[in-house]
Image 1: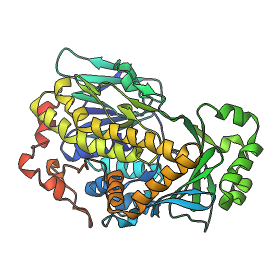
Image 2: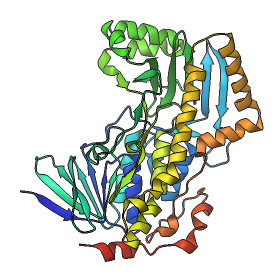
Image 3: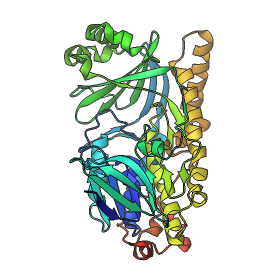
Image 4: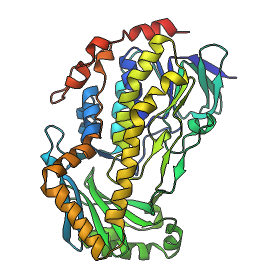
Length: 441
């Protein structure tokens, strides 16, 4: 027997983008049903580095301190090393307080905090263990989604808008007939692992350049380090075939500072997780009654730790577009396409930057390459231009604020939040509670 429910917005995917958007909409008086295929947030090898731009979004939502209280690590910035020689030191402590740092925040801590905040709001329904199986279209202004629950029974959610926030292999995008726009932009794949490291902190995200490879290392909670080993694209199967001993030897040689931890704690290939690194940008992010968000619309590599940052900023940009569309009773592609106009330039800028980063710091050795890296390092580390570059990486070329003026039940502004951005839009406030009242089934 098919179950059914009505809502204003159906969000597919309880990642950082989907949960943050849900919370913003709920605080604006919009009813939200959130579908998530997993039953837990055990996502150990998902992105966890929070840039200052993402931290500010969470702070403006009033949830940053709560997420941090579950456990995190503050990091000073990025470093690139080659044979123990420091090539590049991007110092985030030069940025204005209170966000002059990177945060290594396990993704489950972020998601659990956002979900707990959503559950305090009226009009929220969370359906975990529900896998999207179809999109629906009615003759009227409603659209919707069908998902199979843990017991195999289908659930039909009728909504004004469906938001696909279900990641880089988005089922929502595929069912909507929108191409992913995948390109093999990068020449590397990434193999992740995590090992206990009590008392062995780096306080940075470090890239260790070694012969023919590069290894990323950073602290994480609780008292562990995460190690990301870059390999030529699609070469992992051949390496894995040689066994865990070869993997341990190569990692130990690349990061001798942690060779003892690698040797002791990596016991089998199951301790490592392969990430397929690619870039993608869907040609269109919306159609009537549907919009794609975050990785569903645009996918990036792990370089520069931009994934969670972009997801949270995307959510903040989509929030007013949806509130105003619902209030106007117009959820057409023409109206929702405003989101892509706002955020596509930021997504494209990150892809371009990651291409340059990959060539500069993961590329081959040689005198010309070494001189180019030295020049880039001097520019970023020692000049005012470098400080501006760091700020753009940290906040994005077009920084985004949460439109707290659209909240009908605002939370107290947390200490340290620079809320001037949203306040500038107060004169344009929409009485968003009316959205829920006017469009309830």
